[in-house]
Length: 111
Image (tube, rainbow, N blue to C red; front, side, top):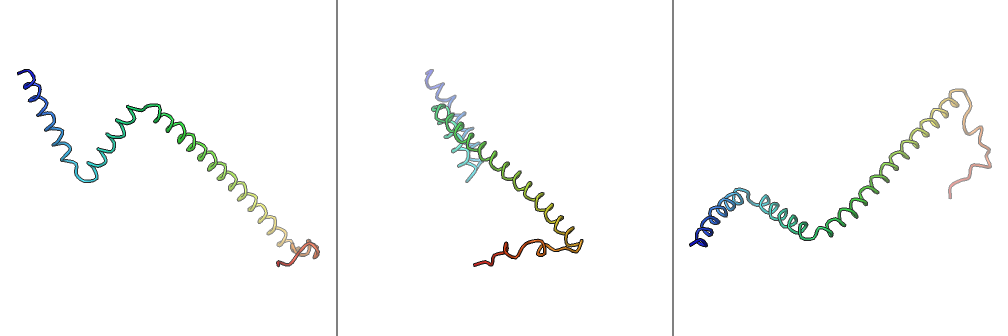
């Protein structure tokens, strides 16, 4: 009789879970199922998931570092190009051209 009482108590709880899961349909239900499956796996194998976090987290940090270095390099190149353009404009406004200063031997035709 005690087992019947436990079985009957478990029945309404599962009905409420089914009602909650039936309210989410389609991709929502699939998403919840995947999440619960991943959560169970992570609780079962914590060291494996810890290594995933360590490896992919480190990879993400490295990519972030390289991305920021690239952006800083591009900024420096942009500043240098602007300075070069300003120098070129100053020289052309002064009446001298770059072609006058560069010896003709230094200019090689493209092949």
